[in-house]
Image 1 (cartoon, rainbow, N blue to C red):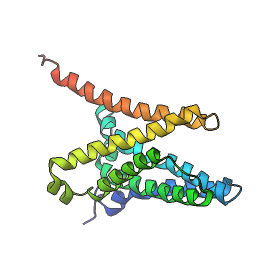
Image 2 (cartoon, helix red, strand yellow):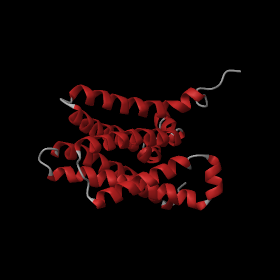
Image 3 (tube, rainbow, N blue to C red):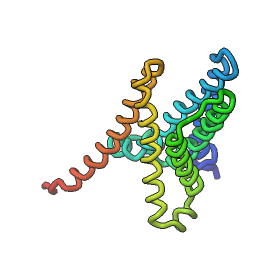
Length: 207
């Protein structure tokens, strides 16, 4: 009997493969655009972060998009939200490798606060990735939901904080102007879906 595309291994792997391709393209463009090894590694760190952020937005807004815009496409994304989350973990790990490579080549130092805040984000991301399975969900019980709720909002905050900081940097202000509104819009979608659903739930029955 033929396996449905909705449950086939190929369908399950699509989000992870898409995230890997996005990060690979970012690295390839960085190697092409950079004038030397340090600049190439710098571009790779920056552009893989942007690629993983776009993948993260898919994960962050998946449930809200279904509530606000129910359609086959949004429902398909929500069904594969776990795989999109794993895809984000993969793409952001590629970013981490690119960032470490840049820091090693350039000798640039990051403030302790940035290292601690970013390190906590990665710890939460890896914890979420390792527990993105039914067995972990059953074992952790209510703590599974708490971990993933805290983790996804903390990672969102790190992205927002990072891109909002670009607004004060004249050399990178356009990055902030593009990605800061995207982060805020993603939060707006979640809030609209949550409070919109609450209002509908409180509406009196008619007829």
